Image 1 (cartoon, rainbow, N blue to C red):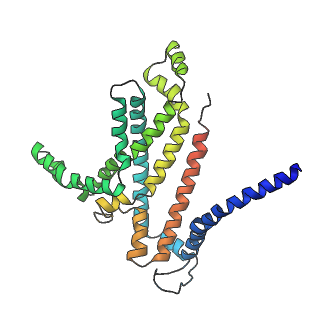
Image 2: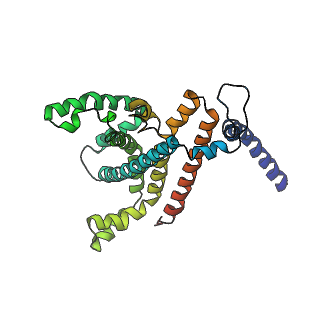
Length: 293
């Protein structure tokens, strides 16, 4: 009797899974497999015929200077932005969980950038860099600020990083605040008795206990920054020259502007594999650092 009930329940659970599995296969598995096939062709995105070229797209892409430059920019941008956004997020989160005046106001203020669309943020900051900062530079007689920083190859990278860190820190602050609030107050009281103060308390108690939050934030931030597209389109369009052309923007340009859809799909799959590998590496090393109370 019990076995019959168990079997009927198992059958019922499986039936409930079927719609989800169908949607997963249709929207994720099939596009992925189709993308793998397209990356092995020279399809231009328009023609009905797709000439099979094997792995030549993958071989050629690693000798493509434009792809290597975009990959170099993307990794540099992602690493710098991830490190800075997490440092700022931890610092702000620690301040916001402490007993300060207008705590709720500052929490809403710091979370505000996460509400806005990345494209909107990009267009707003473009105007700030193009109009407000040069005007401010003229008033203060600072030569560096009098030119459009987005049009200068020496300054455009850091101009993009500033915007990215400002927006990306908002979500990370919330995650770090949640992690900090799980630390029992008794742990800090014991540390005070043992004479731990300031940075020593942070590095020996706070930091090890929020490693799970750090793991989540590093993975989310790195993934987001490796896939950067909106800011680049809104602020620089990949310029000046190809100085800020990210891999995602290159993929779009290859597929939709240069009619090299198969080649662009190969670049997209390589970026996907890189993100997956980097995420697994982050999880592998950071999970070892997690501390259980």
